[in-house]
Length: 178
Length: 432
Image (cartoon, rainbow over all chains, first blue to last red; front, top):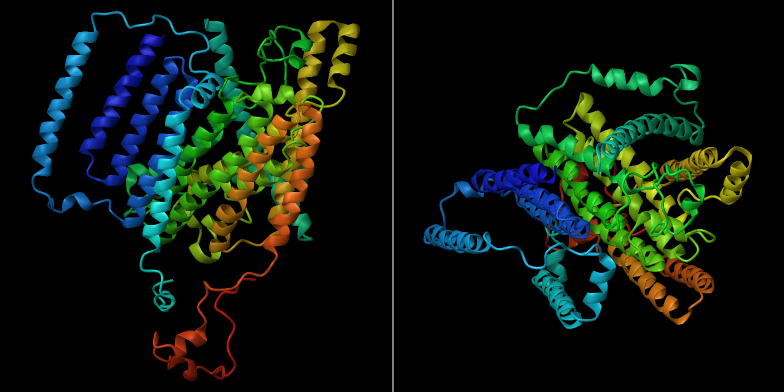
């Protein structure tokens, strides 16, 4: 049964990814990406990792995609693709980089497919949130703290950039500036 | 997993879906009758005895309404949005334990540590070790239905409702997570069954009183109910995100809102009011086992625990209707101020309290009461601070618009029948 579920989920993930690329409307693209994220979350579940499933949903589907959608809707940028590119060389470059990525991925798969995956069966407590938390606060404490500081800097940066041009109280009193 | 287990799982899922849908139907009646009482009216009492068939009549009416898709709407997304709204509201129920009916016919296993005991609880669909994270994951995707409905309708009022909803849900999700994180830290588990087990003796509201208050406020905002229902403010937005929806599609949005309300109340019961636990349940089980054997004992314990859970749930729903009848809608900027400047800092303070107290005071019971005292003091201080009047700087006075060179003096004022105001007028919006 796992095998059947895996193929269905993988097909959904691929369809979502391809449809995201070809969709002309930015909101449709975002929705297909959401479908892709959901399928990947189910793949995590098939690998006996409910923690990653929940995190994939919370972080990607619940937070990042909602923000994408929010920005697209707020700016009314659904149809921005219709205008010609401002940076003419980016499409050929993207194509070249994409081909390179596919080549690397295929090479990796071809090398790995004949070997057994390392480690064999996962332990029963694999991906247990308590163990993960303990690791984060012992072995990986420094990376964890550094990530926190980076995020804090990002938040401060957003606040500073958002304050620019708002300093003068007179400008704020205009009817449109409210 | 063998086929029998799979079959039982499917039946469970089916039953819970039907149950929450029925609960939604009767919650609407409950709310309408109660609101009527609060407002000194009678309420719907014509269809059936005591208005009991009113939900059925409403459902039939909605079914037979004409189903219209606006010509300018984005058709696939417009059709998808109600489904995206209602699915999370239903699947959130998977990890909530409604009771403990042990199919291994041993009621004692219900009161033992669920990590070690041999319990096959049929009143909880899935017991996973990340139950709380699952709840957040599902509430997180709940925002899509509303947002997409607002966008796909291609209507400015719907759009405003959709954007308001995403801003509001994103803001309050943080406070909600902080409140629940306190519970997770208190019981050091992410599993809902484990959290319920550890509330034997002392319910979660004692150590997490501040968390409970935050949870109640943030969850009311999360299910966009009054006083946080700016998403569908009728005076401003016609109907909000569901303006362009009719027939069953409208009913699905309506259903989503109410099922989410029931779900969030059930989560509050699970985290803060001991879930299905009730004093005397264990004694009842022992007595029934002496009287009629273990099978009857587990059946009775299962049904009584389900009843206790539902009783607590109805109490929460009553409070929710009461709040709706009592409080006016918040203004948008105050909604954001409340979420970001009050609830989130209080949530973080609660996390600090919980962490520090449980480390310093090893005795769980003593620590719980210390936390209760700290919560009450903090809440009193916060309420005191919030009632100090703030300097008003975010409103535009009409007199400023006149005197400053921002706007030319409005000639329309003098042409009106009422005399032009000589005294300074009231602020356009006041920081009451």
